[in-house]
Amino acid sequence: MLKHFHPSLEDHRIAKLAAFAIALHMLEAVVPSPLPGVKPGIANIVTLYVMCQYGFAKAAWVSLLRVLASSLLLGQFLSPGFALSLAGAGLSLACLYAGMHLPKRWFGPVSLSILAAFAHIAGQLMVVRFWLIPHAGVAYLVPVFAVAALFFGTINGLITAQLLKPKAH
Amino acid sequence: MLNLKSLHKYLLLGDWLVLLLAGLLVCMSFLSLWQNAPAAKVQISVADKVYATYSLNQAREIHVRGPLGKAVIQIAKGKARFAKSPCNSQYCVHQGWLSKAGQVAICIPNQISLALVGEAKPYDALNY
Image 1 (cartoon, rainbow over the protein chains, first blue to last red):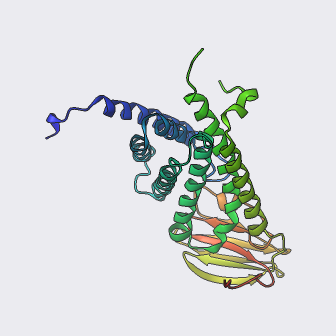
Image 2 (cartoon, each protein chain N blue to C red; image 1 turned 135 degrees about the horizontal axis):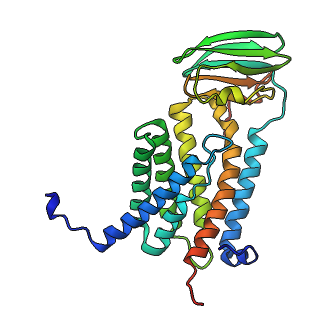
Image 3 (tube, rainbow over the protein chains, first blue to last red; image 1 turned 180 degrees about the vertical axis):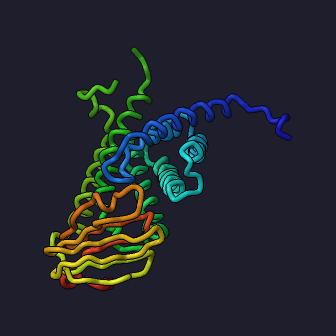
């Protein structure tokens, strides 16, 4: 029964971080973009930060809660936009899970961020190609999305690295 | 705040490698997917079916009916564009004239798309 559910401190933390990710997602939704679909994806900074700080399971929670709640707030739950979001988030989580096992000595948040960004566009383009626009011409857009993924993936990774830096002084 | 001068501190050796590989991937995608050949024909698709293919040599206007209504596609001087579309966003119309092989204009709401094709496709099947 619901009234016997006692949220733990961990639950609260996930909720707070997800709320922060949702806020970033909303912020981004109002910023116009030159090409539909090219977005900085700043909410992914939260996902990456949570993964590095609290582990993969919490990052997955935060990311999926963000996709679900944002789609409800934007009124696109179960719409193509939601499917795109979910495919992107899902595939980049899978990629982060794999990337987590890279040796930490050589691969930092920037690597993970770039991998996740590419996985994100790969997931979205698959939805577009196989469901929304079953048309080989979609390939024409791939380079544009790839440039965006590289650029924003790097920036988001650098911001995450900065956030993760221990505050010694 | 992000300190631009100290950014390199956050990049480990593997990060540079990932950056390099991703950069190469981006360059390759441009080289392989954006061919600069002029187009010869425009292929119009409605939903997932090819509706018609027209030569770009002859100026004409084509009226195509999609789920939202009638879109007008204009062909002139080796180029093609969405001249009118009943969709809300008008992304397809704002995309303007297409002239290179491989270019596409896609109207998701009305499910109509234009794809320019060259004289001959560089390949029609690949075998390994």
